[in-house]
Image 1: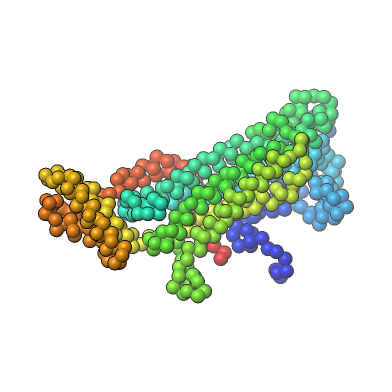
Image 2: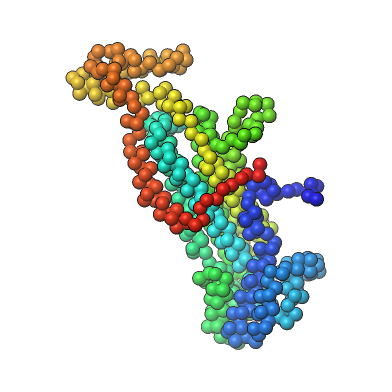
Length: 478
């Protein structure tokens, strides 16, 4: 039965995916340790160290056979996590136990594994980020022609389109995707560097042969799927890397936070609404409410991810000389939980953008409330073309606008600005001519074309690269 007496991490219990949770699981971690030990032994054998193929085969056969209980018993005795797993691995590999971890320090498996797991996690983040972008692309194209009020300072401004606004969200996410891809493609392994980064133990193992020590580092990197390692390290890889990686996660969180804030504002205006399940309850007291709970959850988790970037900054800046261990407990929390949180954010984001509802009639209603004010400049220019005096007509529009604004704000009545202009013969325009100017599509500029151009030139090439990873559907736990 489930233990309800201990704290349960909500990132695992409620929010993040099984795939991301597995990446940072003990099984994933210790399997990677063993793969690193195999790579090291295999590379040492290839470079002439007295290690047999039989020993390598024994190690490979037990990579996935993690004897956790044995390791736990050894750790109680040794108070050392790496050595406890060296001993546990040796129990399963009696022929190879003498060459496990040969020449290495704890950071060989610890640091290299951290980098490998971060790379795996970033690749999963990238797939989900592309799916989110693809959902928004489809949304933007579908609503590229639908005029809507633009807002500056959350005050009604010149019209845009529903689809164009979505492109603003996508552009931020594309920037994040570029940064994420750069980090994945340029990630370096710690490599085989020894206790303080001098490779002294390996130089001794290879009897002073510097070239073999250098080749060992290259071979291990290659076997683990990396092109290169950091050229110099202390005992650990520079903790600046952790800050670089978590900063990318923070950037993604910033972009999605902005997007969901917009959705929450628009849901308040009843223009756009996130998915709302048939039996979902918006409020325990107010049954009519349809709260943007998913977007709010995203916003909440985004704040957590953004704040977490402070941890690696503090850790990196306060490391002493070749290393201190005051980074360890912090990193166990900040790295894994930042990835779990950004995974949850993307999962919820995919769910939200897969079912966004647009209420076009409500959007039209809001446009009609504001468009008369926005249309006056066009009406003024047309009236001047017909022989009207620009200054006199401008003053009339100013007076009519003030009177109509008072009617709307103080009396709660409809905007009658256009009716006032239609009745004024000085504008020399028929009712039909003025009404034709009031078509909202006349006020969106190039917005619909911008959407198409943006999709064709910038989004589709990215989506094409990941077309085999599209189609993620997310059913939220709660």
